[in-house]
Image 1 (cartoon, rainbow, N blue to C red):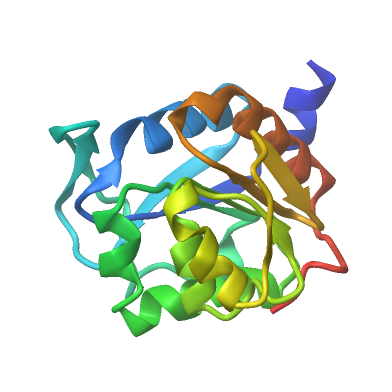
Image 2 (tube, rainbow, N blue to C red):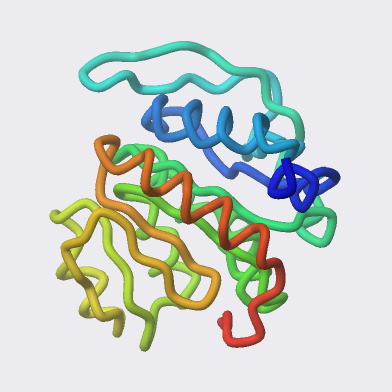
Length: 189
């Protein structure tokens, strides 16, 4: 109950586009909402976005705010679901990259799973940070200056990362813990 009270009234932006790995959004979002956190799906376009469910298209979800409408100052944290297509398309959107970078500049908690750290590379926020991801992008992260490790979940001064959907329970626990802690002075861009 005490932990729920610490998170009541907080808001988290979930940045995504078509092709996000569905379970990497739905399960963390459910954990956030059960903890009393308000969540908003933020996407480059309005209407609906479509998830990817392992090997085929998944469900559609209504967008709460477009990138043009969303103000990162309104949020206490950021969640970046993975999927191969999702971050690959988002990193081509300058507004999406700047949206991510803003959370680091404001020292707010950021959580990224699976292929989502590709957005962190594009936002130039991984240099000197320890994190994990889906193994196929470890070289990209190392080349961008990150210390990549193969662990279920890694936290580094407000940045929480995990490798894949199997890691979601540990990812959710750490994501909520970092959000409870709030501003991390050593979180940086």
